[in-house]
Length: 238
Image (cartoon, rainbow, N blue to C red; front, side, top):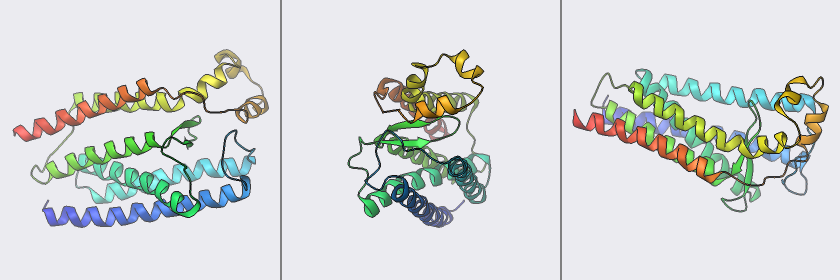
């Protein structure tokens, strides 16, 4: 793939991702104006069931759209994956940029946020998804740029293992605080046997961010960076 073609794809996927980020931030502005008229903060305000379901499917739809953009941008599975994570990362970073411009939030990079709702609530300081996004952009650019020279660029099995392991470790870091809070009130068996979700829902409305597990997060980042380094070195030698 020619450098000019890569730059053209990079430009248009960046435009697409930034536009999606604005739409995402606009939805959040509307929701916060309705649910948090005095400004967003923990504990969370109650959310109607239909709105909560809509939010979950909106998040899923966002991922599908980003997957579609990545699939159309790449030539093979490695580059399709690379463009997907690139789009995701740019979207995520500019989501916070637009929120800062529109409503002056977050106050700082250490401000806590709800990051995701599937399958449980993910939380963490804003700087953490930004770091993950920058790491994703690095990985994407290594794959795409090396793919410029090698038609059949691929991620090796060991590199995939490291990438997946690192990603899972970071997910653990994001769900750690919220899950610890829930498990301090219910055992796993009690959660499984709950006949209704009212008790769990009421408890979730009492959640206040406590401690982010930085050691777990950093470990996950180091594992992913190791995979990126191995990939870069392998193709640099060819």
